[in-house]
Amino acid sequence: MEIPDPQYVKTDDGVHIGYQVFGDGPDLVLNEGWMGNVDANWDLPDADYPDYLRALARRFRVIVFDRRGFGISDRPASVSAMALEKSMEDLRAVMDAAGCERALMAGFEAGATVSVLFAATFPERTRGLILMSPLVYYWRSPDFPWGWTDAEANEFDAMIAGHWGTERFWEYNFATMGEVADPKTLRVMAKWSRACASPSAALAIEQVERQVDVRALLPQIQSPTLVVLKAGDVERGIWGAARWVSEQIPGARYAEIDGDEHFFGVGDTGLFDELDRFAASIGRDEARFDRVLSTVLFTDICGSTARTAALGDREWRGVVERHHAVVRAMLGRYRGVEVDTAGDGFFATFDGPARAIYCARDIVDAVHPLGIEIRAGVHTGECETIDGKVGGMAVVIGARVGALAGPSEVLVSQTVKDLVAGSGLELQHRGAHELKGIPDRWQLYAAIDSRS
Image (cartoon, rainbow, N blue to C red; front, side):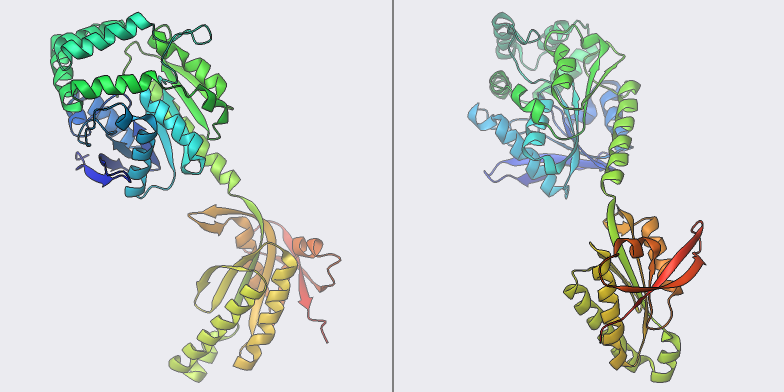
């Protein structure tokens, strides 16, 4: 995979946010937390992190951005300019620019904080929430034993102020996580951090994160949620809160995966296994949620080939255009929704079977002055939305019923007959029929126009 070129979007308050889009699949917004640089991320040690991004790209269309103050984005360094709400607005602007309406929100450390706030504020734009080593509150307290103490925070500030962008800082930072990095890694991380932020920006964002407390939002999360923590982080101070975080979010799944290093990389196969399962479960759930009971109507002009030969192409096109206008007028009258038009046939849906039958009968009558007849089929069943269109077995059955109708005839299935009982519609039995590709024999009925 080629390294993608970065792009920029300007937020409502005039800040330029740098972002990249790469990969193929469902949209995933990667919110990497404390700092980053969408260019320099591809130069991290031993290609581990770049390969991690590539592994994500094989599963998702990844949208990654530099929050304000970091990387290639504009770098205001004040606490007020880098507030959490601003990062949420950065995220929304990037999604809009990338043409992303809804996405999986994947947040690491402080990126999880922004992801939680976004999911709670914009549930309609959040397909699912993936929180990796999440930060939801900074300080240690009796009711939150995982946070930092004043002494630890002051020591960290001193290291940023005195050693930001140096190997000394990263030696200290790895030590706080119980890790020892080799000299090459320290050099690369020092250079990377200089590309990510200035000392003032790093201090400012640290102050922002110390004011963060999104614990009260956790029970309000509506999106499916996966919380992931490495086994080595369970006893590492603030990161050990992950299980507790999952317990606060309704229905969240907690996954503790193998690994001693704090940062995630391509070697964390447990993470990718969890992501695959999570994305698949959301897809299955959405397929179920997108199934609705609907009535389908299929109409088709009878003998169109012969009529075309008799009238000629030009005159026949005029007849078809008037036919289409009639059908659409009747769909509007009976609150039908046009789904598709193929040649001289229509496919529409209704929220009630009686309206579909009345609509079909009126279409039959309205096209007679055009010198044509139509056939129509009506069926009610559970339909699913596929790529924004109605589909599924109920649609296939409706089409098969319509194909068996005669000229000026409206055929309906047994299901429709049962549902319109008591409506005053007259239905005559037309016998049992086989529907191509559909199991069993189907009882069909003709809707008789009993109006005087």
